[in-house]
Image (cartoon, rainbow, N blue to C red; front, top):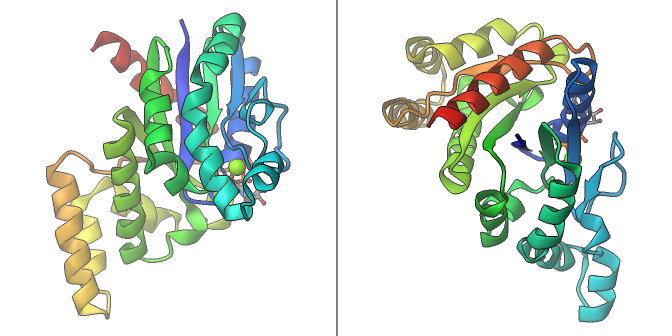
Amino acid sequence: MVNAIFITGTAGSGKSLLTSRLLQWYRDNGAYPATLNLDPGVVSLPYEPDIDVRNYIDISTLMESYGLGPNGALVMASDMIATKLDEIQQEVDEANPDYLIVDTPGQIELFAFRASGQYFVSNLHADSKATLFAFDGTLVSSPINFVAISLLSSSVRLRLKTAQINVLTKRDLVIDKLKDIMDWAASAHALESALNNEKETEYSLLSKDLSRSMTKAGFAPGMVAMSSVTMNGLVNVAAALARTLNQGEDG
Ligand SMILES: Nc1nc2c(ncn2[C@@H]2O[C@H](COP(=O)(O)OP(=O)(O)OP(=O)(O)O)[C@@H](O)[C@H]2O)c(=O)[nH]1
Ligand SMILES: [Mg+2]
């Protein structure tokens, strides 16, 4: 039974550290997890990936062979991820983990919004799949920003088409705002009243319209808060994943 968990989120939101924490959490709980690094451009990781796209795609070779700059090479590398699916699938099948934790590229647009990432997520064979979207706690500084990141989360869901869990990362850094943020996530009413108090009327109106549409469309961002430093909330992330992965199985 391979459960694939795709860790997505804005750049620097804590995806890689969360990958390492989930890996440890599953190990500590007697499961057999494995990690897959899908970021061809990453230089160092807080864990030793079991499967690594960098073994198949090398940014510096692409730069030299095609005369590309670092960004061009990164785009090309991202587009090549899909072409390495068979080899990566073979490694996954050989490892046959209970949980395959997939760390995705820092630049979310290179993974979620180009064809390659979507192809990879939908064609990887796994018994159950879920996407975790990391809301960087330090970016959710206002209700308007909260809506803006929720839109990004919704748009990742539209692209990857898997069950999705929204996770507020770095909760240790936003303790003062935590209650507000969790209220916005839990209640459309709380979010609207917070938006009503914003000074930028034009933007708060737009944010309200957008959040209503997301709520209506079932994109309501239920949220789990966690910290990869204190580990507070990690158990809730694992519980949300268990629920979501099980639902995937039934459906
Ligand atoms: N205080 C605190 N810092 C965190 C937490 N999670 C991650 N960080 C820090 O945030 C920075 C980015 O973390 P990463 O795990 O590399 O984030 P990422 O999303 O993988 O980054 P990219 O792949 O480059 O987009 C690092 O300096 C981490 O140590 C957290 O829960 N609390
Ligand atoms: Mg990373």
